[in-house]
Each structure stands twice: as C-alpha cells, then as structure tokens.
Amino acid sequence: MSVSALNSGLSGLKAYTRALDSSGHNVANASTSGFVPQQVSFQEQPAGGVIANISREGSSLASQELSGTDLTSEIVQSLQFKTGFDLSAKIIKTADELLGTLIDIKA
Image (cartoon, rainbow, N blue to C red; front, side):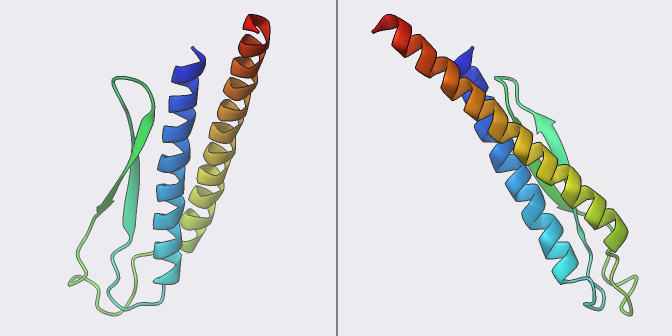
C-alpha cells in the first residue's frame, strides 16, 4: 500500500506541476494576439496515479486581435492545481512515515 501511495503521490506531483506550467504559459501569453491557450485534462492510470494531458482548443486564426486566455479561470485553476500538488505531497509524506514505521518495527 505504501509503495503504491508513493507512486500515486509522485504521479500527482508531476501532473500538477505540468498543469501549473501550462497555466503559467497561458497567463504569460494572455496579451499575445491570436494566442490559443492550453487546456489541461487529467487522466487516471490503470496501475494507479494520474497524468496531465495538455491540448489546445480553438484556432488562432479566428481571433488575431485578442488572446483566448480567461485570466479569472486561470487563477481559479492555478489554485486548484496548487491544492492538488500540496495533497500529493502529503500523500508522499504519509507513505514515507508509514514505511519508516514498518522499517523500525522490522529492525
């Protein structure tokens, strides 16, 4: 259980880091004409854990004047991604403590 928890926590850290990177990219390019923001979706893995998929929706040809980035949405998503990252880190910390306790019991 602890090893799978560590793997789930690590995959969560990677996925949420990737999602935060994408959100930062969208915010940094919010004033770029015709910029098409990236969309993040999370996918559960069969063996446990999660990955973040990055995609672009829409077309930069449709709007050469304005960026398609919604800053309000990006702020909310960044807060959600940060919370997910923090929870993944707590999973790793708890799994590490459990493994340490098991090692102490066996010693």
